Image (tube, rainbow, N blue to C red; front, top):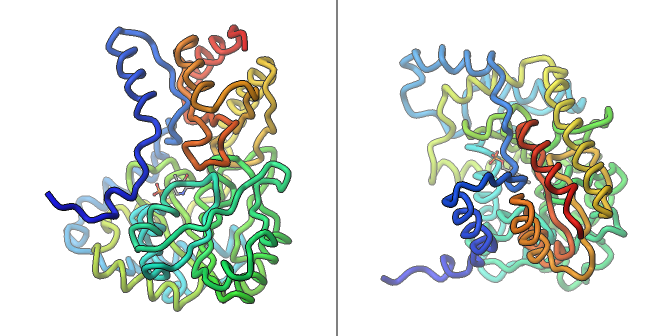
Length: 386
Ligand SMILES: *Cc1c(COP(=O)(O)O)cnc(C)c1O
């Protein structure tokens, strides 16, 4: 068979070896506890599921949706934005429902990247920014995320030649995998950079509603000029424990939204309407409906940080996101350390280099693990000698 080169361009799955070991252990009946994947263990709120049950019975929802979605969904999204961030969006031109943020992120590359173009991509980062770029025939210019810069790309380190050639910049705050957050001063510098170099900014805000200690993540669109240069991606997945339902939205610059519509209307037929009704229910609900959920994650975060520090590891408690990003002792690589935890404690963590070469030296622990498993896993880790 003759496959397109983009199929080979995707790097081999970095966790093949560890996945094989997990499968082996499980086959032997060993109780493996995974802090690996970021997929909420807490169910979707009951009122949101009830809305789906109702919507499923309405034959109007059995037919093709429109790519731009139900007007009620777009209004709910704009209303949520107004209440949450104080920004007015035009629901008809500045909001587009997505089949999850991942879908929108992947397709957005097709709006900006021609073969040979450059995308500015954070390293470490969520893999879809780079894979989407490659699928569109573009090249990634990696922006290292370094601890000393607060895990924010150093815009001054991007050469003017690269900046001139770049079509798009990907950012993600609260950040996966580092848990870092961005300030509005930083976003202001990003807008300035985007203007100077005519670069589209794609901000992934999938974790905007997962935050701790009273911290409220900001929106890129809150910064003056942001709506001229970029889009922001939101996901109901992490905000409302809805990973299984596949729902998100892009908001921002109307011309960019229109370009994304061109791609999507030709490749997918939009979000199933019954699922959009779940989104309407979620987004029209009170903003504090997620506080209790965040309190659960915060307790878990505190326990993970406590145990990591007890193991002698260095960790900054994240203000937001679902992840604790832990620096490991320098005598190990990330993969070696992850393997050690699996071998000696039957605990799975993600090796930081799986998110890019600058993730080397770190591991990521996800907080989306039930309280009992979390405690059992942490007790095992606490007894390890590093
Ligand atoms: C989970 C995640 C997504 C995907 O969200 P979906 O709406 O479920 O597709 C996007 N970006 C980041 C950084 C994520 O961690």
